[in-house]
Image (cartoon, rainbow, N blue to C red; front, side, top):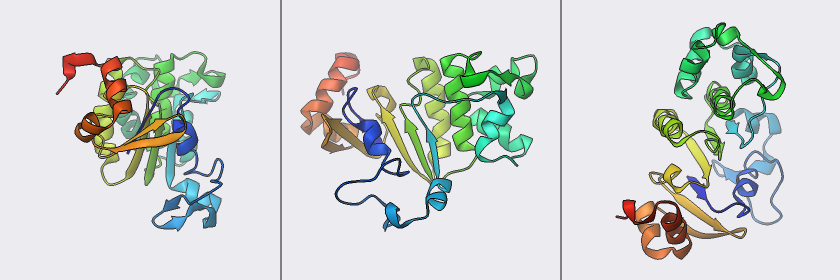
Length: 214
């Protein structure tokens, strides 16, 4: 499920209801038909892998940062998660590889490197629900394309929410939810939304123009 909308449309607010960073004031958010408010917080969070817009890394090695949600992970699991997040190659380019020291908040890494380590951290727990909150916003389009390709396999068999401002990120989603000023204004696949959603059409034209028009 892709969540699309301009800055301030309410994308992160909507997605933050799933792990109960705050609760709804009306209606329900359900996982497998169960209201999340009736679930134990730990059991709910164990099912969710979240990559926020601003990835928070801590002082320690690259391996320790990736293993944060699964401290007993094997080297094979760490490397598999890093490869899926398109992080393995740049990690191996460091003199100490996975033992490279990461400074507080990842100050010695680029924005794209931090995001890919954060994605690897989310993937290593093999979550049933994967939430990418504009997680590829700080990587270039080529890297984003590689990450999206890798995530196709990762997303298979699990529920995935992809929050995005770039429409190119969401074109192949099973369902696209379009937000505008805090409200859901349309849902559907790309082809459907191009026909009946003025908000979606406007975003598409602004970002991709007629060059990719179907």
